Amino acid sequence: MHRPLTLAAIARQADLSPSHFSRLFKEQTSYSPMDYFIHLKIQHACQLLFVTRIPVRQIAFELGYDDPCYFSRLFKKIVGISPIQYRKQPRGEYLDRYERVAVSAN
Image 1 (cartoon, rainbow, N blue to C red):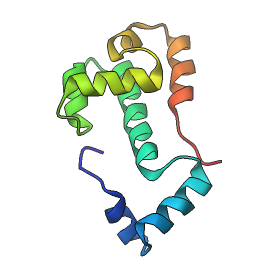
Image 2: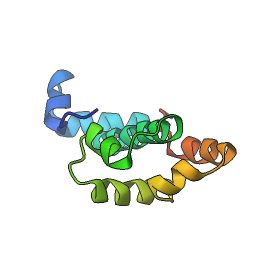
Image 3: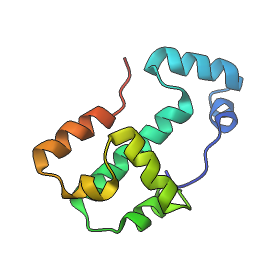
């Protein structure tokens, strides 16, 4: 998850054009490929925040974000609270927010 990912590279693996791959992917998941990947990263961040004491800065770097502030803004935009607030919340609230972030195929 920490390596850069491009639509062209993913489409090439599927032996499809980027536009065709993107259309098929969105039909199946309701997410664009890149939005799906971002949600997977944020979902993984949720797990790390909940079960470890790894600093937010380090989690951002491990997920491929060079700027921890950008990561925190993106996290808050998707989850609704900052990574630090997420880490401090009670277990039940963690599960509710985690399920809202989780991506799944339709």
